[in-house]
Image (cartoon, rainbow, N blue to C red; front, side):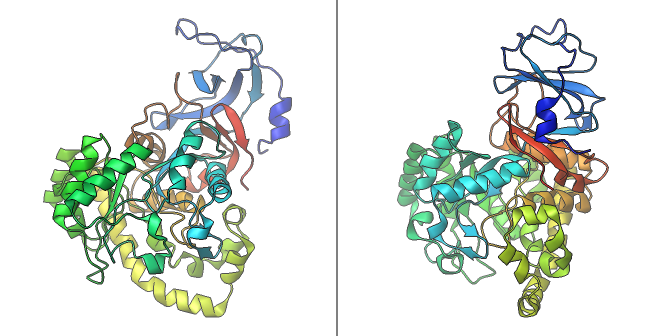
Length: 450
């Protein structure tokens, strides 16, 4: 039977204690012992074990404990699976709502509501990579201080683009203050200095020419951005699409490719260069799948997990024959991109290039926040990665991309961010949607997803 809030609160205290000899301090009054759950650690699920948490931190993970410290509340989670909170390392917030997008949506209330949606899907931290107006910096600080509900907000602020280039202001419905567009190296350095002072986690740059339709960021600007960011100890994330974009990014010292390579297979030279430099890779396969998924699978409108992420208007449009016909034609060009992206992901993963979860969700109405993250996991498995590898990528691997060693893991001292699942995601990655509860900073913040 799925775990409910009422059942959790009324569960009897268990006979449990901290593992003897660990040297861990006893939890203060108010701690929680989650017992009889299988816990994801080191790429597998444990035997039924206890997760002991207090003060927002994991204190112990062990089987066969006895003797509950005074004041600790026990919750029986037999039959459930606990996975660390996921980090989506490439999203956008405050830009798309329902069927619309635009700068009018970048408000505190909208961003907070979207962060709460991410958390409800087990995504307890996100990195918003560009398109953030000045309000981003204040919201980032509020989130880091725990004053904003939902997934912890990290990111790059506005990011650096090209005048009249990517991201295209008109089609993307962007205000002037949502992307900085420096014209020369001096302006790049000034822009990065201002962003670093305002508080960012990464510098985002757009290397993209839309198949020759837009001006492309020059190698000089790319290198200037990397040098300026590294002076502030900030990593650089590059928007890329083609193999040529990726080559420019890696040769210029970019730290993270923020999208998958979708035009042709990666070659041995690029793979070797990425391995040598430690370049990280965010494939974002779902951005192309989103262009045809809703016409291919109209039955999604009746799926409870999908309903939790979308508006009634979004789902109604899926049944509109005119929209379906138009979107179906648009979507055809994206199928090959998905297949190439998956092929390159598998090549890079097998070569040992660090991979992270990211989707570009929230950049357009079709890239549905929360749901896109779950689909990305399925697309990674479809590409040939194991469910265990995909879970590690989405949790520990993606947190590491942001420099975090205490997130995305469930071990003593780590932040107590996790999702409780009613089924095993290693048997079927779609079970990541069988969320019974989500905990953040040691507190339950969301209940059943479906």
